[in-house]
Length: 110
Image 1: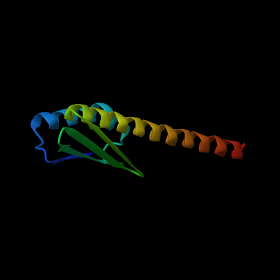
Image 2: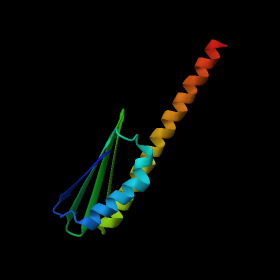
Image 3: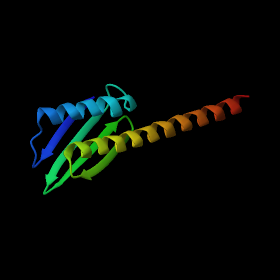
C-alpha cells in the first residue's frame, strides 16, 4: 500500500509524517486489502485553519474525507477517524451483500 503526503503552504516534517503513518497503521490499514491500494493525504494551512484531506483507493472503491480545525494534528486525527468509519461501513455493506447472495444461491439449489 502506497502512502503519499502533500503539503500546501506547509512543510511536512518528520513528526507529521510519523503521526500520519501511526494513524494509518492503526485506523486505515486493517480495512484495506494489503498490496492493493493507495492512500493520499493533502494537508494545508490557511490563516489559523488547518485542513486535512485523505483519499483511499483500493480494489473497486474509493473513499474521500476532509476535516478542518485550528490544530494540524487534530485535523489529521479527525479525517482519519472519518475515513475509518467510511471504510468500516463499506466493508460491512459488502459483507452483508455477499451473505445475502450466498443465502439466495443456497435457496435456489435446495
